[in-house]
Length: 335
Image (tube, rainbow, N blue to C red):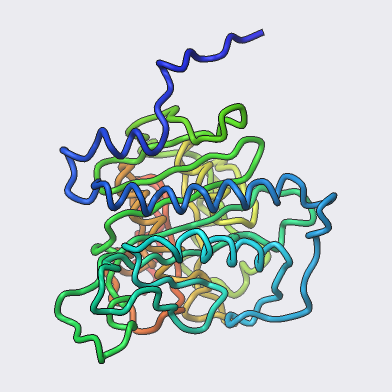
């Protein structure tokens, strides 16, 4: 039996943020308070995911969200949980959810709510009923100083990914893992059910520079751009392995740790791509770059894209530096 770690060796998320305060301007007491709301929400969500069958939260509600996707019962629970846990943090001004059409203003735009939190409450929710890993994604921005209160919240929300103060995800799998960055590397924590806290298990995670694994839904291959199809032919010829879960959080988590590349290219049905820029692609791109990886939309760096709509979609190629560059070469050769 493996002995339990001595409490003196445990570092929680809150402790980690406090220890980083002097090294990073965004790692303040205020930010720690914000992040504690996110970790509280994800622990509540994890408890529902773990008990989904016996808690009768499998299946859909019969409704569609703003994305035109079937809403699952756990989607609603996750969304409401995050809003409830963050809505009472006085330093949060605006919440943006995949599940809602408009940004939710928490504090008066003149007030102390300086942070904008964007989130996908339950990524991969279509996999809930078959017990596949799913997750929560979040991104944190600061409200812009050059926006007048009367202009509304959208201008605070529509910022490029380079402006993110923090980003992260929680994956609900065989263990519940939190990964986050504030621009000073990627740090990973595991939820310890014995003490009910996320405990540090790896600082400054580094993504392998290359990896012989690609992740893509090949069911749509015939409608992928020619460059992507040529890349897939090349990858098969080089004995690359296909690994695709269908949950961005789970696929990215594997790629972060093992290397390789994840692709969600445009298709004839979705020429602008399928993933949302602000609360899926941007936070993952921030994490990838902070771990030494790369993220592109097939033409340019994801973090440099200037969003025009709250639920704007984008193609995504993300992963190890060499593998992303190789996909980019095939795409450039076909343009």
